[in-house]
Image 1 (spheres, rainbow, N blue to C red):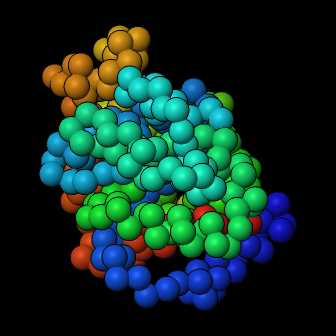
Image 2: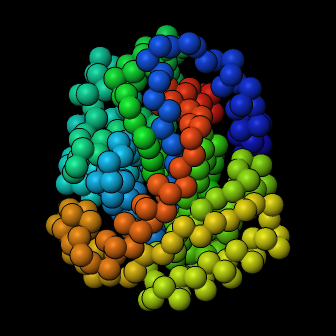
Image 3: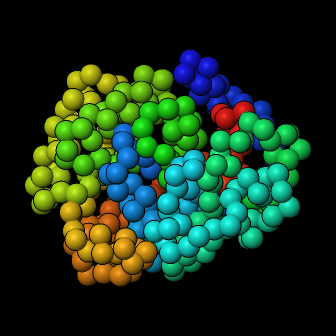
Amino acid sequence: MLDQAEKLRQLAVKDKENKKDIGSEKSKPRIITVTSGKGGVGKSNFVVNIAISLQKRGKKVLIFDADMGMGNDDVLMGFLPRYNVFDVIVGNKTIAEVMIEGPHGVKLLPGGTGVARIEEVETEQREKFIEKLSSLADLDYIIMDTGAGINRTVLGFVACCEELIIITTPEPTSLTDAYSLIKAVSHFNIKKSAKVVINRIIDDKEGELTFNKFNSAAKKFLNIDLQYLGSIADDKRLVQAVRKQEPFVISYPSSTVAKDVNNIADRIIGQEVNKKESSVQDLFRKIFNIFS
Protein backbone atom coordinates (compact mmCIF):
# COMPACT_ATOMS: atom_id res chain seq x y z
CA MET A 1 0.00 0.00 0.00
CA LEU A 2 2.93 2.34 0.69
CA ASP A 3 4.32 1.83 -2.82
CA GLN A 4 0.88 2.52 -4.20
CA ALA A 5 0.56 5.68 -2.11
CA GLU A 6 3.85 6.97 -3.47
CA LYS A 7 2.61 6.36 -7.00
CA LEU A 8 -0.59 8.20 -6.24
CA ARG A 9 1.40 11.19 -4.98
CA GLN A 10 3.58 11.18 -8.08
CA LEU A 11 0.66 10.77 -10.48
CA ALA A 12 0.31 14.42 -11.38
CA VAL A 13 4.02 14.77 -12.17
CA LYS A 14 4.21 11.56 -14.17
CA ASP A 15 1.08 12.44 -16.10
CA LYS A 16 2.59 15.73 -17.27
CA GLU A 17 5.84 14.05 -18.27
CA ASN A 18 4.08 11.46 -20.40
CA LYS A 19 1.60 13.70 -22.22
CA LYS A 20 1.97 14.20 -25.95
CA ASP A 21 0.40 16.76 -28.22
CA ILE A 22 -1.99 14.48 -30.06
CA GLY A 23 -4.31 16.40 -32.37
CA SER A 24 -7.22 14.04 -31.79
CA GLU A 25 -7.31 14.76 -28.03
CA LYS A 26 -10.05 17.34 -28.36
CA SER A 27 -12.67 15.55 -26.35
CA LYS A 28 -12.47 16.43 -22.66
CA PRO A 29 -15.09 14.32 -20.90
CA ARG A 30 -15.89 14.37 -17.21
CA ILE A 31 -14.23 11.31 -15.72
CA ILE A 32 -16.19 9.80 -12.85
CA THR A 33 -15.21 6.80 -10.73
CA VAL A 34 -18.09 4.97 -9.06
CA THR A 35 -17.11 2.67 -6.21
CA SER A 36 -18.29 1.25 -2.88
CA GLY A 37 -16.90 0.00 0.39
CA LYS A 38 -18.41 -3.45 -0.07
CA GLY A 39 -20.06 -5.52 -2.75
CA GLY A 40 -23.78 -6.04 -3.17
CA VAL A 41 -24.85 -2.41 -2.70
CA GLY A 42 -26.04 -1.89 -6.29
CA LYS A 43 -22.98 -0.10 -7.68
CA SER A 44 -22.95 -1.62 -11.16
CA ASN A 45 -26.71 -1.27 -11.51
CA PHE A 46 -26.31 2.40 -10.70
CA VAL A 47 -23.51 2.82 -13.26
CA VAL A 48 -25.43 1.23 -16.11
CA ASN A 49 -28.67 3.07 -15.44
CA ILE A 50 -27.11 6.47 -14.75
CA ALA A 51 -25.14 6.15 -17.99
CA ILE A 52 -28.32 5.47 -19.96
CA SER A 53 -30.13 8.30 -18.21
CA LEU A 54 -27.34 10.72 -19.10
CA GLN A 55 -27.29 9.44 -22.68
CA LYS A 56 -31.03 9.98 -23.00
CA ARG A 57 -30.41 13.59 -21.98
CA GLY A 58 -28.19 14.15 -24.99
CA LYS A 59 -24.85 13.27 -23.38
CA LYS A 60 -22.33 10.84 -24.89
CA VAL A 61 -21.28 8.31 -22.28
CA LEU A 62 -18.61 5.60 -22.11
CA ILE A 63 -18.62 3.03 -19.30
CA PHE A 64 -15.24 1.51 -18.50
CA ASP A 65 -15.89 -1.66 -16.51
CA ALA A 66 -12.80 -1.69 -14.32
CA ASP A 67 -13.93 -4.42 -11.94
CA MET A 68 -11.25 -7.07 -12.47
CA GLY A 69 -12.79 -10.43 -13.23
CA MET A 70 -16.08 -9.62 -11.51
CA GLY A 71 -17.48 -6.90 -13.77
CA ASN A 72 -21.10 -7.41 -14.68
CA ASP A 73 -22.07 -4.20 -16.43
CA ASP A 74 -22.27 -6.16 -19.67
CA VAL A 75 -24.64 -8.72 -18.11
CA LEU A 76 -26.90 -5.97 -16.78
CA MET A 77 -27.07 -4.59 -20.32
CA GLY A 78 -27.81 -8.00 -21.79
CA PHE A 79 -24.42 -8.64 -23.46
CA LEU A 80 -21.64 -11.21 -23.18
CA PRO A 81 -18.41 -9.70 -24.59
CA ARG A 82 -15.78 -11.91 -26.21
CA TYR A 83 -12.93 -9.46 -25.67
CA ASN A 84 -11.73 -6.85 -23.20
CA VAL A 85 -9.43 -3.85 -23.20
CA PHE A 86 -6.33 -6.06 -22.99
CA ASP A 87 -7.13 -7.47 -26.43
CA VAL A 88 -6.78 -3.93 -27.78
CA ILE A 89 -3.58 -3.18 -25.87
CA VAL A 90 -1.57 -6.32 -26.68
CA GLY A 91 -3.61 -7.81 -29.52
CA ASN A 92 -4.71 -6.68 -32.92
CA LYS A 93 -8.25 -5.74 -31.93
CA THR A 94 -9.55 -2.27 -32.52
CA ILE A 95 -11.57 -0.26 -30.03
CA ALA A 96 -14.65 -0.82 -32.20
CA GLU A 97 -14.20 -4.61 -32.12
CA VAL A 98 -14.01 -4.73 -28.33
CA MET A 99 -16.41 -1.97 -27.36
CA ILE A 100 -20.10 -2.73 -26.90
CA GLU A 101 -22.80 -0.27 -27.84
CA GLY A 102 -25.70 -0.50 -25.44
CA PRO A 103 -29.12 1.12 -25.09
CA HIS A 104 -29.50 4.63 -26.51
CA GLY A 105 -25.89 4.52 -27.74
CA VAL A 106 -24.13 4.11 -24.38
CA LYS A 107 -20.66 2.66 -25.00
CA LEU A 108 -19.15 -0.04 -22.79
CA LEU A 109 -15.44 -0.88 -22.76
CA PRO A 110 -14.94 -4.14 -20.83
CA GLY A 111 -11.90 -4.18 -18.59
CA GLY A 112 -12.15 -7.67 -17.13
CA THR A 113 -8.98 -9.48 -16.10
CA GLY A 114 -7.06 -7.29 -18.57
CA VAL A 115 -6.85 -4.56 -15.94
CA ALA A 116 -4.76 -6.83 -13.71
CA ARG A 117 -2.25 -7.38 -16.52
CA ILE A 118 -1.53 -3.73 -17.30
CA GLU A 119 1.92 -3.98 -15.69
CA GLU A 120 2.88 -6.44 -18.45
CA VAL A 121 2.30 -3.86 -21.17
CA GLU A 122 5.37 -2.52 -22.97
CA THR A 123 5.88 1.16 -23.77
CA GLU A 124 5.31 0.71 -27.51
CA GLN A 125 2.07 -1.17 -26.86
CA ARG A 126 0.87 1.62 -24.58
CA GLU A 127 1.48 4.29 -27.18
CA LYS A 128 -0.28 2.30 -29.91
CA PHE A 129 -3.24 1.82 -27.59
CA ILE A 130 -3.34 5.54 -26.83
CA GLU A 131 -3.47 6.19 -30.57
CA LYS A 132 -6.34 3.71 -30.98
CA LEU A 133 -8.29 5.61 -28.35
CA SER A 134 -8.55 8.54 -30.75
CA SER A 135 -11.57 6.75 -32.25
CA LEU A 136 -13.46 7.57 -29.05
CA ALA A 137 -14.23 11.16 -29.88
CA ASP A 138 -16.71 13.67 -28.50
CA LEU A 139 -17.41 11.94 -25.19
CA ASP A 140 -19.14 13.91 -22.43
CA TYR A 141 -18.65 11.35 -19.65
CA ILE A 142 -16.39 8.41 -18.89
CA ILE A 143 -17.79 6.44 -15.95
CA MET A 144 -15.44 3.89 -14.38
CA ASP A 145 -17.08 1.06 -12.45
CA THR A 146 -14.49 -0.30 -10.03
CA GLY A 147 -14.45 -3.32 -7.83
CA ALA A 148 -15.72 -2.94 -4.28
CA GLY A 149 -13.59 -2.60 -1.16
CA ILE A 150 -10.30 -0.98 -0.23
CA ASN A 151 -7.30 -2.10 -2.26
CA ARG A 152 -4.60 -0.64 -4.49
CA THR A 153 -6.70 -1.15 -7.63
CA VAL A 154 -9.73 0.73 -6.35
CA LEU A 155 -7.60 3.53 -4.92
CA GLY A 156 -5.70 3.71 -8.17
CA PHE A 157 -8.86 4.25 -10.20
CA VAL A 158 -10.04 6.84 -7.69
CA ALA A 159 -6.77 8.70 -8.26
CA CYS A 160 -7.29 8.61 -12.02
CA CYS A 161 -10.71 10.28 -11.97
CA GLU A 162 -11.85 13.87 -11.61
CA GLU A 163 -15.00 13.03 -9.66
CA LEU A 164 -15.72 10.28 -7.15
CA ILE A 165 -19.15 8.81 -6.41
CA ILE A 166 -19.51 6.38 -3.51
CA ILE A 167 -22.52 4.08 -3.32
CA THR A 168 -23.74 2.86 0.05
CA THR A 169 -26.95 1.72 1.72
CA PRO A 170 -28.45 2.58 5.12
CA GLU A 171 -27.24 -0.77 6.50
CA PRO A 172 -24.62 -0.29 9.26
CA THR A 173 -22.12 -2.69 7.65
CA SER A 174 -22.39 -0.89 4.32
CA LEU A 175 -21.89 2.51 5.97
CA THR A 176 -18.91 1.26 7.96
CA ASP A 177 -17.21 -0.08 4.85
CA ALA A 178 -17.99 3.12 2.90
CA TYR A 179 -16.49 5.16 5.73
CA SER A 180 -13.34 3.02 5.70
CA LEU A 181 -13.01 3.60 1.96
CA ILE A 182 -13.38 7.37 2.35
CA LYS A 183 -10.89 7.26 5.22
CA ALA A 184 -8.31 5.61 2.94
CA VAL A 185 -8.97 8.16 0.18
CA SER A 186 -8.49 10.96 2.69
CA HIS A 187 -5.46 9.38 4.39
CA PHE A 188 -3.53 9.05 1.13
CA ASN A 189 -4.68 12.51 0.06
CA ILE A 190 -6.14 11.10 -3.16
CA LYS A 191 -9.26 13.27 -3.23
CA LYS A 192 -10.49 16.28 -1.29
CA SER A 193 -14.15 15.68 -2.07
CA ALA A 194 -16.60 12.93 -2.98
CA LYS A 195 -20.28 12.54 -3.79
CA VAL A 196 -22.47 10.01 -2.01
CA VAL A 197 -25.53 8.11 -3.21
CA ILE A 198 -27.64 6.23 -0.66
CA ASN A 199 -29.19 3.17 -2.28
CA ARG A 200 -32.15 1.00 -1.21
CA ILE A 201 -33.91 3.53 0.97
CA ILE A 202 -37.43 3.22 2.35
CA ASP A 203 -38.19 6.88 1.67
CA ASP A 204 -36.41 10.18 0.95
CA LYS A 205 -36.25 11.01 4.65
CA GLU A 206 -34.20 7.88 5.34
CA GLY A 207 -31.78 8.82 2.57
CA GLU A 208 -31.22 12.33 3.92
CA LEU A 209 -30.93 11.14 7.52
CA THR A 210 -28.43 8.44 6.56
CA PHE A 211 -26.25 10.89 4.65
CA ASN A 212 -26.37 13.51 7.41
CA LYS A 213 -25.12 11.02 10.02
CA PHE A 214 -22.49 9.73 7.63
CA ASN A 215 -21.34 13.23 6.73
CA SER A 216 -21.16 14.29 10.39
CA ALA A 217 -18.69 11.50 11.12
CA ALA A 218 -16.61 12.37 8.05
CA LYS A 219 -16.49 16.07 8.95
CA LYS A 220 -15.40 15.26 12.49
CA PHE A 221 -12.64 12.79 11.72
CA LEU A 222 -11.65 13.09 8.04
CA ASN A 223 -10.29 15.80 5.78
CA ILE A 224 -12.76 15.33 2.93
CA ASP A 225 -15.83 17.20 1.73
CA LEU A 226 -18.87 15.02 1.06
CA GLN A 227 -21.81 16.02 -1.10
CA TYR A 228 -25.20 14.31 -1.11
CA LEU A 229 -25.98 13.40 -4.71
CA GLY A 230 -29.28 11.71 -3.94
CA SER A 231 -30.94 8.46 -2.94
CA ILE A 232 -32.49 5.50 -4.73
CA ALA A 233 -35.57 3.64 -3.55
CA ASP A 234 -35.64 -0.04 -2.69
CA ASP A 235 -37.92 -0.94 -5.59
CA LYS A 236 -38.94 -4.46 -6.69
CA ARG A 237 -38.83 -3.24 -10.29
CA LEU A 238 -35.03 -3.21 -10.05
CA VAL A 239 -34.95 -6.92 -9.22
CA GLN A 240 -37.35 -7.67 -12.06
CA ALA A 241 -35.20 -5.70 -14.49
CA VAL A 242 -32.03 -7.55 -13.44
CA ARG A 243 -33.73 -10.88 -14.09
CA LYS A 244 -34.67 -9.64 -17.55
CA GLN A 245 -31.08 -8.43 -18.11
CA GLU A 246 -32.42 -5.04 -19.04
CA PRO A 247 -31.70 -1.73 -17.26
CA PHE A 248 -34.66 -0.56 -15.18
CA VAL A 249 -34.68 2.91 -16.72
CA ILE A 250 -35.68 1.12 -19.93
CA SER A 251 -37.83 -1.71 -18.57
CA TYR A 252 -39.72 0.40 -16.05
CA PRO A 253 -39.17 4.09 -16.92
CA SER A 254 -42.06 5.21 -14.67
CA SER A 255 -40.87 3.28 -11.61
CA THR A 256 -39.70 5.02 -8.46
CA VAL A 257 -36.16 3.70 -8.87
CA ALA A 258 -35.96 5.02 -12.44
CA LYS A 259 -37.21 8.44 -11.36
CA ASP A 260 -34.61 8.53 -8.59
CA VAL A 261 -31.77 7.79 -11.01
CA ASN A 262 -33.09 10.35 -13.49
CA ASN A 263 -33.07 12.96 -10.72
CA ILE A 264 -29.46 12.12 -9.94
CA ALA A 265 -28.58 12.40 -13.63
CA ASP A 266 -30.12 15.88 -13.69
CA ARG A 267 -28.02 16.86 -10.66
CA ILE A 268 -24.84 15.57 -12.30
CA ILE A 269 -25.55 17.56 -15.45
CA GLY A 270 -26.40 20.60 -13.35
CA GLN A 271 -22.95 20.44 -11.76
CA GLU A 272 -21.11 20.65 -15.06
CA VAL A 273 -18.19 23.03 -15.28
CA ASN A 274 -16.91 24.73 -18.39
CA LYS A 275 -13.33 23.49 -18.05
CA LYS A 276 -12.83 19.78 -18.70
CA GLU A 277 -9.44 18.54 -17.57
CA SER A 278 -8.73 15.15 -19.17
CA SER A 279 -9.25 13.30 -22.42
CA VAL A 280 -9.76 9.56 -22.71
CA GLN A 281 -6.08 9.31 -23.67
CA ASP A 282 -5.10 11.24 -20.54
CA LEU A 283 -7.15 8.83 -18.44
CA PHE A 284 -5.39 5.73 -19.71
CA ARG A 285 -1.98 7.36 -19.37
CA LYS A 286 -2.81 7.85 -15.70
CA ILE A 287 -3.94 4.23 -15.42
CA PHE A 288 -0.71 3.00 -16.99
CA ASN A 289 1.34 5.20 -14.64
CA ILE A 290 -0.48 3.97 -11.55
CA PHE A 291 -0.57 0.25 -12.32
CA SER A 292 2.83 -0.25 -13.91
